[in-house]
Image 1 (tube, rainbow, N blue to C red):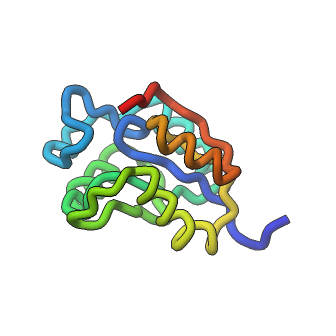
Image 2: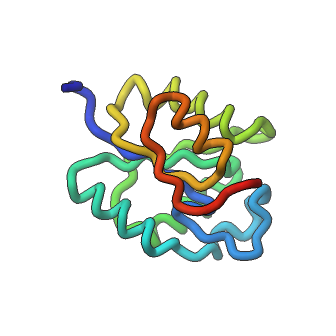
Length: 140
């Protein structure tokens, strides 16, 4: 049994938030995304069971304020951390998220599972030995 607190890693675009027709590679209009109600409910239930919620997004830091506002309006549970892509960082999501995991999450938390949609990141999480629940097709 680990002495680290339990956490769930959750992606935002395509997982927690439904982008509609918005370009997944653009941060413009992220505040207008709709909540993915089933995923929001699962995240709330996991939080109620005592797991910390750690968000890891491919969104740029440029969208932090709008993302935090969206989370306040739509998630309704406290977030332990919101990790986002650095400004002008165009590396693949899987590379960025693995780096965030290794540096900021793995040392602090015992990860119960990950919720994500994008195939490349789902493969990466599973390669790291984490249980990843793929919430939608994500071949982009």
